[in-house]
Length: 463
Image 1: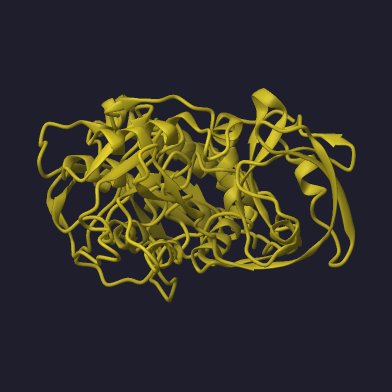
Image 2: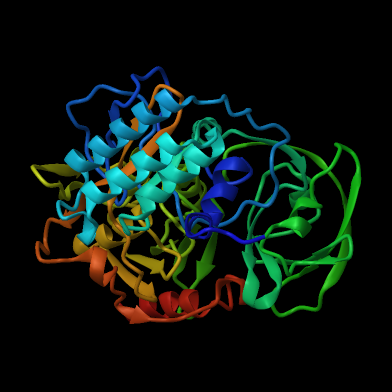
């Protein structure tokens, strides 16, 4: 199948939004007015509460996120949108971008020319699916690789995801396809599912399902993990450093929010270090789950430091990021700036077991995106964390959501973030720069053998 540039750009997003088995989105999605902007509540790459009163979700980013492993059984059907309504939606979307887009020069794009081009295409006639692709292509033409247009199907899925709306039949894992090695690595294991009961863990890799190799980005082999409740599926799995093994599991119903893996590690000198993997900020329960992890790790003994693994964090929702940030920092974090204004980002400390004072090591890399980058950059700027791993790619625009009468939604880059202590920082172009280089292919190591984790543990002993 040949993919357009728009499809290729957001392959992971389409899996994400149409296959509820992975991420979720932001604040409670309630009633909202069509084409009313949904400001990011606290940061994404993100933002602060703005004058609008809305309870619609507000993500920082939804692209470049890990691909979910198993998909739900039903997707809402697209309702046909006639030419006049298409023109109305197009006109409104074009004007929003013209007036609100972060970059006043539209990244060098002739925005008036874009208007003439797409209006002519719509007037020439296109069906509903083609229209939605065209609106996404129009936004893609801006070149920020962050802004996105969601059709009503994707919006429904996005809202369910934010609410922790995973509900499907499978083995209960969240996977990321690794094309260079023809496998899918397990990022998360859902509590209470068949995979957890069988002892599967994050970083295990699935090499084939029912004899079909993991060599196709379309996800055909991954789809074989789905099936009727109670039916069996056979697959080959490999733990880093071990030989492949064949497993047969009975599929079960999986529901609930994304888990946050954690464990207590020990440095060579015997310090007790908590390790937390934050997979995303796109599920409303991520913040509380980080808090629960801190509670459990400090229930019987105190920690000497905390490792926050943000290498898979592709962003999500501002309030989720802010909740997570509050465990580790306090006060003014910086400013969200746009073409006309700026707003301050402040968080109030929610200390658990000394989390707001303990030394931190934050692991980042190429897959740390958007709110994942801003979260990490803030902790470095605040003097709270040493960053270890690889410098991030730089994609920290704050998106605002705009809803339309047909149920579609556009997320448009509206703000960027400036940290409070380094006003000259340019995270969008420079990325979040690490303090200690420690490249590591996440799927090739266990937590204990991961070079970035090992570097972090050594760093704690050196302090």
